[in-house]
Image (cartoon, rainbow, N blue to C red; front, side, top):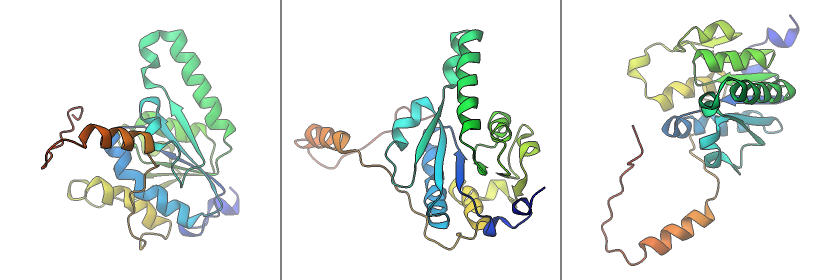
Length: 202
């Protein structure tokens, strides 16, 4: 074990970081403040986000991200060979990323396995992780009471572990200019007040 594997997380000099939070839409939004806090903590680092392909456009062009690594969970429905090829390609990209820090905010066996496969020196997750995901971590951030914490505050414990818990939580998003123009044209002549429903939410 080298010296960098023993220093506290708040002093760890990461250069290539992968943030694992593949889904779902609301959970990805909840994790956005951690991304911005990591960018403040590691301004020169290369930061990538592991996300399900269906949510990639939500993050594309984010000012605090250098790359998106897409994971196609639906590949398993296309047969075993397609699934093996898709997952194999993703794992190869994960290994080729040469990450020295991986943060797993998903906290499931699959995401823990992704972290382990990266071979990063430091693999960080929350103690509330399930399915044995914590077996794959080098560092476990304690969650005192899972039920008492909103997801935003639970994920924020990671920012705190890296010494940036005092910065404001910021929900930054990429610019969605085309979508904004579409919404303006659609709603321009609609009388107010408006009621918005997230009909695709579970």
